[in-house]
Length: 315
Ligand SMILES: [Mn+2]
Image 1 (cartoon, rainbow, N blue to C red):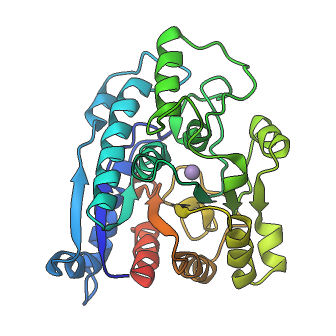
Image 2: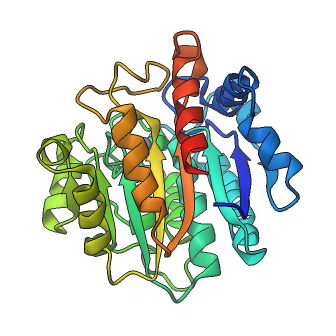
């Protein structure tokens, strides 16, 4: 793929542990040790570009007043900026390659895609150990990196926890950010999970109720990677465009110690590369996001090196 623009989105406001904002720079550090650096090759080619989106991570120095959706007010502003940058990228006919801090940023990415392709059906391939289907009403932690898909699908879930009026207002703003009407940006039949293996009951209920397609580790061990990619694409055959959201924790825990919530039984490096290569070949693919690399939790930059290897093999 040649005509790309890298969007650096450093926000880590939605994370549980600190450090995901440093993921992009750790990936760049891993790049510097190579002969043909990926980022330089992007920069020197005028067709390709790198753009940093403003972040609000300094807000983390103060506690958030929002218990059920930490920093939701700032995350809303952040996601608006991400949406604008993503939409501009598509308008400029550049492919957005988003390297992001924590996964809550994907609310902005999806809003930006929807802003640009407002009448189209957007298929989402969520390559992640987690479903990210929590809402402020169901989250035991209040960390918003567990909520981006719920926001994009306008899911509230079972209303287990009470939330404040301000939290409810901002949650509604996030749910409908990038949609013209008060309607979900993403429909349940337009989502495929790959590598999902660490969910909570509230999320399982939604997946079951709305029959969301899941290809879990048991499935991808019994299928070839090509069959996994084909099945995902077939399930989304009715969609006009595809967005792949790649959480580094979809890989096995042993390969990616530098991420907030590592889980075992994940993808191998080869499986991830092959899978993403096949998904990225689809002509409908309009955006790719890599997220949740956290060098503060890493061992000698292993996870950032892995992320770099994967991006380098794709673009
Ligand atoms: Mn995630």
